[in-house]
Length: 271
Image (cartoon, rainbow, N blue to C red; front, side, top):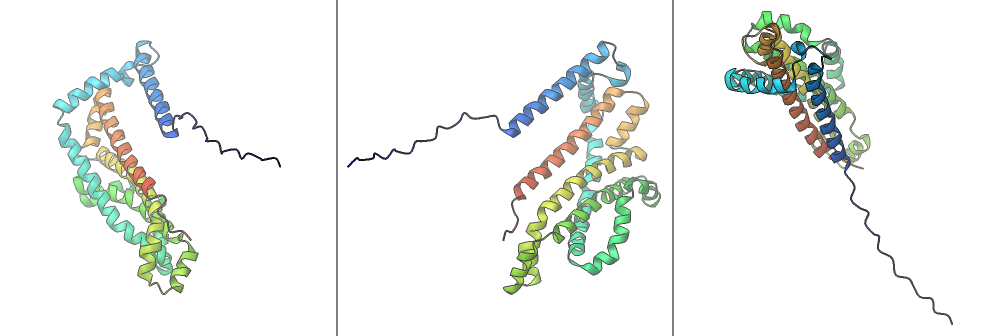
């Protein structure tokens, strides 16, 4: 009788570690930004563009030092941040409950949805002159513009998240005697969180735009006010410093919300 020797299972040799997709994207992004800065620095020196209107990264860096040291930057930044956070917090307080109501009540949707969608489609900034007439040129009008810019994306996405809840889970919970509050806490709320955070991310961009444009239109201080001052005096280097400050702040806020989105992306009830 011939004995057949069983071969032992071979161990899989691990493949060499590859550069992750996130790290690869970071490297590509860094290289693209570096290439842009080099081109920006060289273009005025080569005569490709007019340096008076485009400035250069080296000049912008020097202007940034001057702005942070001598331009009362913290005062203007504090005013703009206060307007942003007050308007955005007020939008969250109003929009999340309203989005929950619209997502769960057909009667509320029939009553509120038509005027809400009309205001959502219309550019919010067309109301800025009215806000200025009603509330004056102080902080209140800019807070109102931020509020109007941020509220609609949050309402729409919260409502959509509530309405996209898994009907099978809702029926199963009802069959086991779950109350409406139980269904809301354990099914609707977890299921709508990704949509809610997506709405908040969109609202951040509109809120930042509302602060800057509101201060551009009429203000006595703030980042937008400084943009007007240096734009009218043709100080392109300082103008770009404040523009970069706005861009960095908006990017940081949207990145923070995106990180929260990633953490709750899989926090959905499953069948």
